[in-house]
Image (cartoon, rainbow, N blue to C red; front, side, top):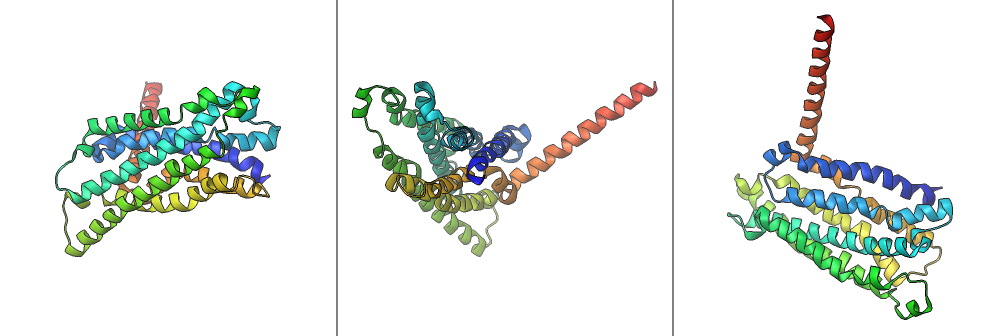
Length: 291
C-alpha cells in the first residue's frame, strides 16, 4: 500500500506546493518587499521540481497500481521520461548552487556583482538549461528504440554514474563551500553587531544552509544506490530511498514558510488582501441588494 500510493501522494501534494512556490515569488508584493535576484531562481526551481514528480516517481505508482510503466509503455513515453528524469534534477540542483553563490556574494561584497544583476540571472538560468539539455540530448535521440541495434547503446549504468556526479556530488560540494562562506559571514556579523544591508536578508541564507543539509541526506543515498547497487534486493529499499529523493523536491514551500521570513510574510499578506477583497465584494453585493 505504501509503495503504491506514496508516489501518487507526492504528485498531488508536490504539484500543489510547487505551484504556490512558483506563484508567490511572481507576485508584485513579493518583488517589492524582497528585491533580490534570488526571486528569479525560485519559480524556475519550482517548475522543475514539479516536473520531476511525473517521471520515475509516477512510474513507481503506475507499476504497483496498474502493472506498467511509462519507460516501457512506448518509445515516445520512454524517451520523454528518460530525458526528464535526468535533465530536471540536474538543472534544479545547479540553480540551487547559484542561489548559494548569490547569498555568499551578497554577504561578502558591499556592492552588487555581475551575478547579482537581474539580466545576469536570466543569462545564468538560460545557460544552465541549454548546457544540461545538450548533456542529456543523447537520451531522446539514441535510447528506447525497440530494435536489436539499440543493444549496442548501453546507457545504463554509465549514465547513473554521470548523474550522481552532475546531480549530487558536484552541486553538493559547491553548495557546501558557498554555505560555509555564508555561515562565516553571518557569525562575523553577529559577533560584530553589524546592522546593514548585508544582513537584511539573512533568513534566506539560513534557509539555504538547511536546504543544503537536506539535499545531502535525502537525495544522495537514492542516486548513489541506483548507480552502484541497481540490483539490490529487495528492490523496495531503493524505491524507499527514491521516495526520500522526491520528497525533498516538494519541501521548498514548507521550508520557505518556516525559515524564510519575507516569503512567509508575503503569503500572509496575500491571504489578508484576498480576504479583505472578498469581504469588500460581499459588502457591495449586499448594498446593491438593499437598493
